[in-house]
Image (cartoon, rainbow, N blue to C red; front, side, top):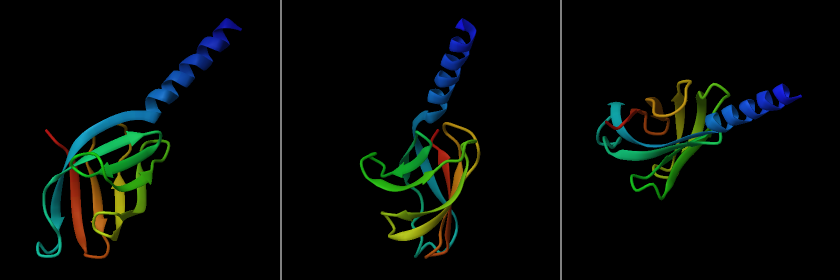
Length: 118
C-alpha cells in the first residue's frame, strides 16, 4: 500500500513538472519571404504551461498565438496571430523548455525560425 502511494505521488509530481515548463525569451528570425511583406527580427516571450505553448509580445503582456502540445511536447498546428491578423502554421519539436521552432505566415508566405535568446 505504501509503495503504491509513493508511486502514485511520484507520477503526479512528474506530470506536474511536464505540465509547467516555464517562460523564456525568443528571437524571431525571418528565414524566407519578402522583407517588405515580412517583418524581420525582434523578440517575443514564450510560455509553455499546462500543455499549451503560447507566444507573447516582447513585454509578455499581449498574447500573439497559442497551440496545444502533444504528450511529447510537440505541435504541428495552425494558430491565428493577433499580431499579424493572419493564420500561421506552427511546428514545434518534441521536448520541454526552451527550443527552436518554426512559424509560417500562410497569408504572406513568410517563414520564421524562433530561437531561444542567448
